[in-house]
Length: 371
Image 1: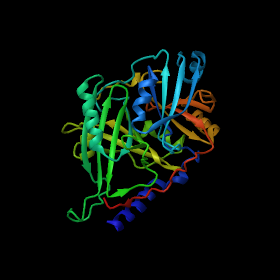
Image 2: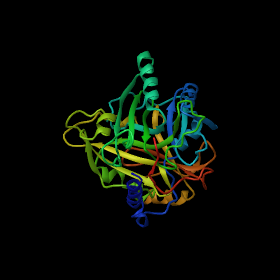
Image 3: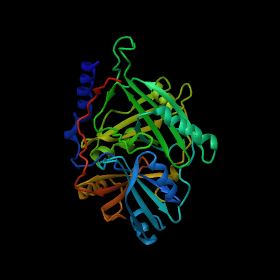
Image 4: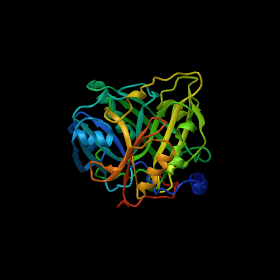
């Protein structure tokens, strides 16, 4: 298996870096923060603490300041949460709006247009499943569990599995809620350095957010091309069809027989983690569309952030692409930034930052482990 994983590492590295010269060198990070609108920060702070996130900064904006920065006429208090030492990607920002503009996408079917899902690694996915099963039984807030399911994502299992020759892969599951959506995964037989760092500080044995999924509408190539031309991400693939015949998507998206969607992924050349995954319903199927609720000021996951040391360049590229970015100004943490919304309906805050304390890993490697 060791030789196979080494070959996989080389081939995957070529996939994500082979066309790097065709993309603007923006210095852009992987997804820095998932930004979540809440009515009250206190229960959300307690919630994310169980996954290893602690508050590292907080700040306030008046209604006038929030209107200028976010286009939302409401006073705002923000909390930035970090998992352990990882400050390069995978953080949370809670947006406590004094007057939220709406409920957001809310509790919805798994392929609802406008839905956002944040993904993290765990040491014990059965424990996670038990915790959320208990929460669902209490019915205080709706939670829908999908999975867990096992899949060999990289076809790394050799021969017939046995007690000695154990299969390689991941077990993953989705949790859909009224204000946050998770995917959790647990690895078996391999690890990826810099991609899901779990520390002893995390009560539930979970990592920073490693990647983020977006349910969008329209031609997937057309609505996501700006991630390459404006942000400088690298496309991992042309849009492809995946669906109910694949164990992972079938379980995580609760796909009925005959159901499928288009998929496209992106990765930053500056971080193997903080990846983007986009899904668009394929064929004659229809999807619930709540994209009008997917905007700053609403509750739930409504924005994400990226950081770059070259903010002016990214702003200029967004202007040239016709994305109509808001003006560069200081955000609530006194960082130069701007907000922009793409044709896929995703809203982004681009933050100026020279670098991170935790050095991101830029080389994607699959390394075998004996478990």
